[in-house]
Image (tube, rainbow, N blue to C red; front, side, top):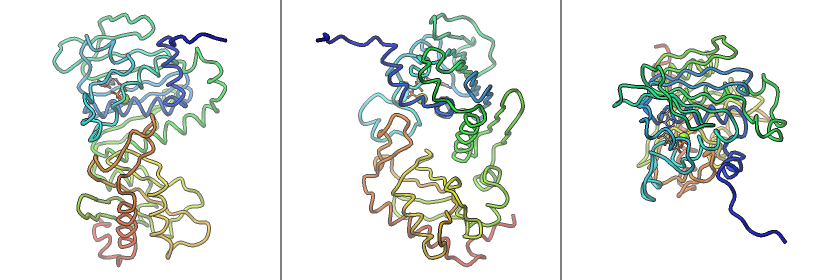
Length: 335
Ligand code: ADP
Ligand code: MG
């Protein structure tokens, strides 16, 4: 019989990493979300070898104070919530304070940052916890290298460089759709892949989803009480053989949710037949207290307090937008 013993901190983080750090794209998602939470207006992402060799995210956000650098890497340490009340109405992407700790436990990680009220930039290397001066005009640069270098079992689950890069690209596109006001750049193996200037929602949707989607879509903007649904929904002419052009955002967070997907499917039921899948990019906004985002560490799942109400609202809003006469539905499409 084995005796019970507490697990070492690093092992706890490595276990938690199993949920948060599924692949390079999950690292990228956490880093970009942190940049957005820090109020960044520009986010520059450089990736090497599908993100396995390196993921580097640079932002112009508020930065991290020198004394806080070790805490940024510590488990259950966050600047985003302090009480259970905060958790119930959380507006930031992050709040669990475990992403960087998990990432640093399975990859070589360092953070360089210059906080807005400090004249100097500092850099911490997770492996040694050493803090040294850095050269940085503003914001934060986080480098995550050699993912799973110390956990070879995980490394085996990684797919080809092209596949992993594809997931990273997809993550960045989702974030870019959610935040058209922010400039994004993406490079892979030192060649530029994506460059997006700050834009309005329509311009950004066009940049990300393409001219063809945009030429065949209706704009949606319906509000009822605390609920609002906005975005773009393609007409059947632009339907797809796969579900890969379905984007749902809840309070700015990309989610995969059966209830929302079902409501959309129903709204299309009369106009889309057979095995085709609708294409859409929809933003649902509601009181944060009406939705629980703390279902899974990766926060891609949500739970609605009033699921029925949300389903009905989304269904009716979308059905109405799809049925509207062309002129009314998209009077500004020529602009
Ligand atoms: P969480 O986002 O849940 O708080 P993380 O482990 O992702 O947890 O980050 C820990 C803390 O590090 C954050 O709460 C934030 O204060 C700080 N941080 C991380 N990335 C950045 C960044 N790019 N800019 C400013 N602060 C950051
Ligand atoms: Mg975070």
